[in-house]
Amino acid sequence: MTKKLIWLTILFLLASPLIFAQTPAAANAPSESHLQWVVISAGFSMAIGSGLCGLGQGKAVAAAAEAIARNPGAAAKIQLAMLIGLAFIESLAIYVLLIVFLKVA
Image 1: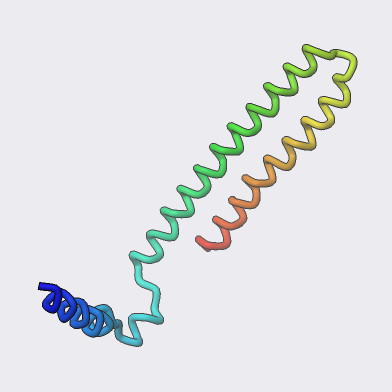
Image 2 (image 1 turned 90 degrees about the horizontal axis):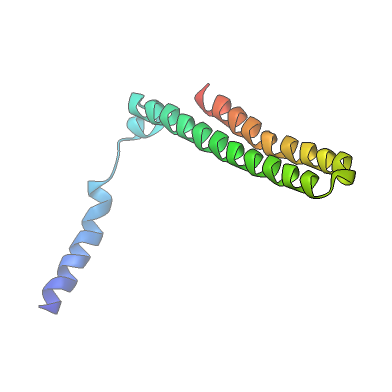
């Protein structure tokens, strides 16, 4: 039984490059289905990136509001730190949008 399995594995390994080979013309030219998947994956990446940015911004604002409620005297410093953090979080969405535009266009 093991000899049959070994020969079948060797046959599969030798035949697989021939089965999955492509013609040179088809390998260089992008197909319509390839472009369709680029657009779909770009949309999903923008949705995921924007959703996670929204969650991060909500958590940052909630933490800042709680910190200001606990220590109103430090409100200015907390707001400044929150705004800088929100700018960094929003830059993630802008970078994802830039990548989407570069891949789709």
